[in-house]
Amino acid sequence: MSKLYHEPIEVEFTKDGFRSFRWRGNYYRIQRVCGLWRERHGWWAQEGEVERLHLRVEAHNQGIYDLYRDRTKGRWYLERIWD
Image (cartoon, rainbow, N blue to C red; front, top):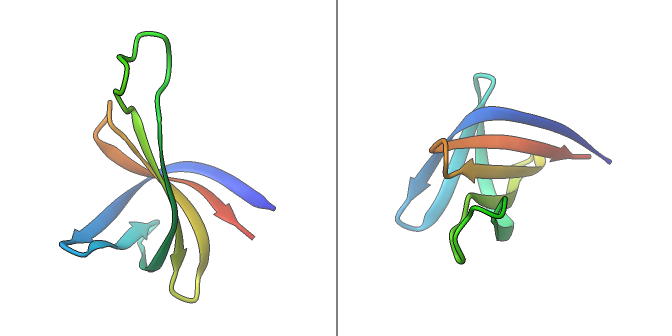
């Protein structure tokens, strides 16, 4: 089961990759990236142009989260929390 949110978050990076994200004032340390995929939307998007970068991450002792960066808005969002 999962629950959808689509709420803005802040994502922190290091030279080694994704480090953490902040949502609703709470800090979540990313333990590992479980999946990464890119998505195009609409017929107007040019071939190879990515509008969203999706990540499925495991936060240290806090579960599995789907995050995405909306390229058109330049923001990161929490999309889903997996039970």
